Length: 24
Image (cartoon, rainbow, N blue to C red; front, side, top):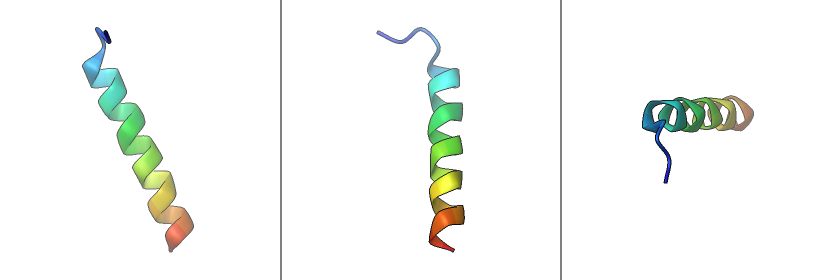
């Protein structure tokens, strides 16, 4: 169980942002 859901969300957003930059 993750107590830091906000932190997980930030990590997901960061990963998605990196993927978008690579796809461009």
